[in-house]
Amino acid sequence: MECLRASSERPGSLLLLSDSLGSAAVGDSYLSALASGAIITASLVVDRRGETRDAEGGSKLLGGETDLLWLRTLRGRANLVVTGGKTYRAEHYKMPRNADLAVFSRSELTAPSGFEDSPRFIAKVGEGLLLAAEVRGLFENYRNLHLEFGAETMLPLTRQLGIGIWVSSEFEQGIESFCEANNLKPLHTVRVQDLLIAYCR
Image (tube, rainbow, N blue to C red; front, side, top):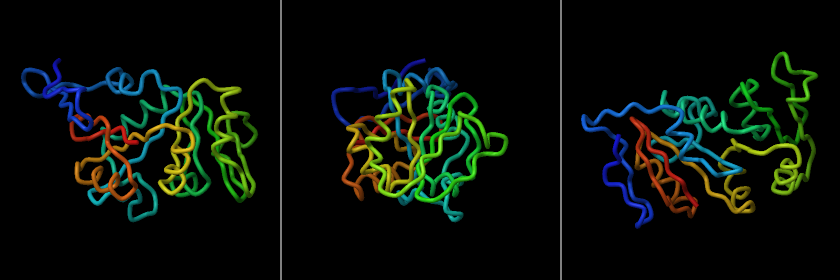
C-alpha cells in the first residue's frame, strides 16, 4: 500500500490512499492511526455546502459507510464519548459499545434504554456549566475522550481546549465551505475511499 501525492511539507496537502491498482482496502487500523497519540478527539461530518445538519436535524444522513467506519474508529479508541443534550436527542443516541457516555444538557435527560441506572451513562444537567472545565475534569477518570457536539458548541469548546476538529465529508467543497465559514484551516486532508477527512484548526 502506498500514499500518492503524500506531502507533510505544505498544510492542506491531500494524501490519497491507494495501492498499485488504485483500490486499497481501508480498515480500522489505518483510520485509528490517523488519530493516534491524541488523548482527546473531536469530529463533525458536513454535506456539500458545509452544513452539519441533515433534513431531520441530525447528521446521520450526511455520511456514508466510510464515515460510519471513521466514527466507530474514533469511538473505539475512546474510554468516554462526550456530547450535548441537543445532539443526544437529535441523534437518538445509544450507548457506545466500548465506551461510557457523558451528556451535558440544560434540561433533564433520559438514559439510553437499558442504562437507566448504569454508571456508564453520565448526565451533567444544569445551567451555566463551564464546558471546557467540565471536559478537562473528566480526565480524572478517563484516558481518552471523543467529542461529538454540534458545531455551535464544538467550535468554541475545541478552541478553549486548544485542539482541532476532524471534519469529514464526501465532498471537498463541503470541508472548504465549513472551514471558511468558521475561520478554520484544514492542516491535513486524507481521502479514504469515498470520504475526505480533514484535521482543521
